[in-house]
Picture 1 (tube, rainbow, N blue to C red):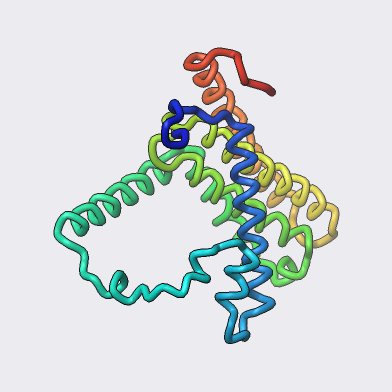
Picture 2: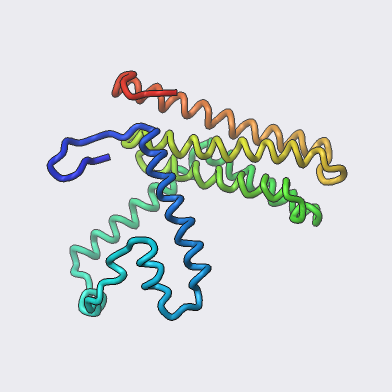
Length: 223
C-alpha cells in the first residue's frame, strides 16, 4: 500500500492488512447499529456523522453546484474504464477453481435448506449457511483483480475465508448430531465440499506466503 505524501512506498504484510480490515469491519458494525437506532430520527445523518467522526457530513456548505454539475467527456471515459475494470475483476475471481468450489458449496447448502423445512429453525444449520456465504464473499475479495499487487491483503482475506469455513465445518458437525436433519449421505457430501474449500484456501495461502518470501524475504513475516 502506498505511503503518505513524501513517504516512500510501503508494502503492508498480512497482519497490517488484518488490523486495517478489522477496523473497517468494526466501523461498519458501528454504523449499522447507529442506523438502526436513529433510523426514524429527522437528524439521523447529523447524529450518525457526529458519532462516526465524519466531519464532512456536518459541513454546512451547499453542495448543489457540485452535485448538479455534469461530468466532462474525460471524466465519463474514466468512469467507463473503471466499470470495465470492475467487470474484468469479477470475471477473474469467478473463474478461479477455489471460488467456484466455494460458490457451489453455498448453492448446495441452499438446496439442502429447500429440501428440509426444519433447517432454517436450527441454529447450527443457520450458522453453516451464513459462514459458508461469508467464506464465499471473502474469497471473492481475495481473488479480485491483481491479487499479487497486494499480497498481504490477499492473505488477510484468505485467512478470513478460512476462519469462516472452519466455523461452517464445526456447525456441520453439530448439525449431524441433531437427529433427522441431515442423512449420512448428505453429511458425507457436505463434509467433502467443506474440506475441498478449506484445503484449497490453505494451499493458496501457502502459495502467496511463498511469493511474499520470494519478494520481500523472511523479514516481517510471522506465522
